[in-house]
Length: 378
Ligand SMILES: *Cc1c(COP(=O)(O)O)cnc(C)c1O
Image (cartoon, rainbow, N blue to C red; front, side, top):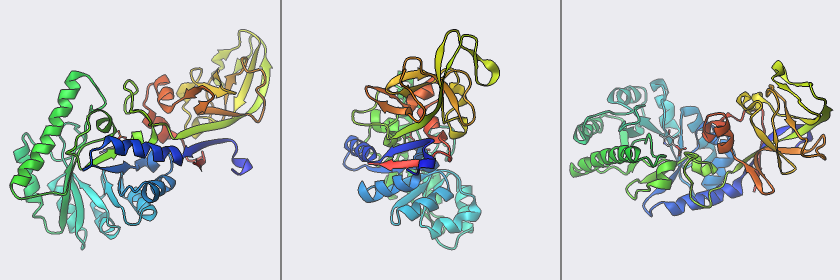
């Protein structure tokens, strides 16, 4: 690492990523392939290194992203992989979809027509069905009606339909109502697929598994398992355990820039929200909300210093924050501290941080900002 970068950085372990892939592959049935979800810069981990590792070293050949820019980036890192865009691409860019040999998620007949009108080359697609997420996709009362629309879409000139898929809303819950809801979502897409097959339309792909489904309700009928958060070793839902062997792959570190003793009555940080009630050792750490370490962690978050948990005191600033290091007498300027990750026997995960301020681990890792260099280790 360049010395001037030794301020706040994220260490991403490709060795752990490879182990996570092994665990995910072992969960899947033989007929199911992993589709690595690498949207949002691989959930903040950096798509270039993650995709190259998954493709070249783990043999993963399917990737999912959220938009065309991400797809074109992934195309550079995995020249012959299949890349599915889960979200919206403006139809005027249909030509680029075809040029880069990308598969577009198609959400309606109208959208399919708009795409083919804008491209001379055929558009490869998977048709999205809204079975209960209420976000995007064909919406029908019965699988038969859904199959009817898909059969009509198959006739659109210049559209190559290679599969159908849906997205679960509550696969990360073990509440019986939620389980029944997900069962219904799954039956809907499988019934649609089977009706199409009976009519002689045999699609290569039908997929519906996200990370939660891969962990808690793996189905041999899903041709792909769209693994996102578990690739990065985090929980779809913090209240449920994830399979053994999955480990977080990102650690977030910073350094102590200044240590001082404060007296009772001294104030720390903006707003004077923290006032020392006794003599304390206070360290300043080189990370703030502009790095993606949320201001909502003010006076709440904990940071590992020499393996001990130290609480944030006062407000998190844009580039710095202060912690109480009274319990770590040898804490000194230049020491490396861990905001996410393991030190000795203790560990602070992105999932834990998320629960401190009422969000999910997904948002924590996606939110680590561009200013934070990602360092890749084994
Ligand atoms: C983001 C996303 C996924 C991955 O979800 P995880 O919970 O991270 O596994 C899968 N499918 C779709 C459609 C998505 O948008």
